[in-house]
Length: 142
Image (cartoon, rainbow, N blue to C red; front, side, top):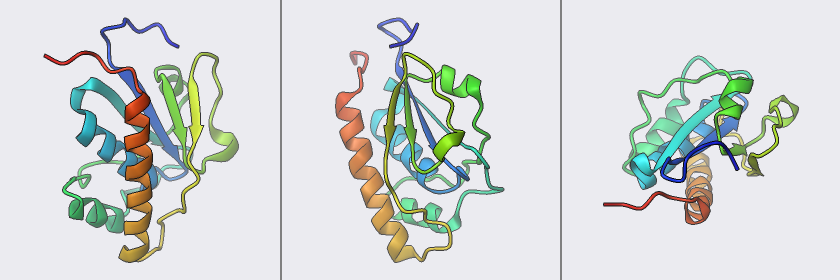
């Protein structure tokens, strides 16, 4: 799939438009569940100024702190450096490179939504991340 060595962790890039909600929650879940066995990135085609505070609260309820995360701009180099690219609504802004595994998760945008709606989106993201984790090539542990 990429040039990485078999011992190197797989790299996953989560992409949504503002990199302020869905992609940040997904990155938080994968980092929490996989630790350093997976390299986790997130980015947005039009990044916002801060992570959605309601998404931060919903993740805090799940025991995951994403309060220090910051939205980042999606670049071709970020995509090139990733084995898996998970899109969540960025549409045509995501560059396509051979040798990458692309998945598109259809999730509502939490922007402007209340905590109850964001909890539902969070739970859907957790389900997707756990499914993804089961298929990732993980390095052996200790």
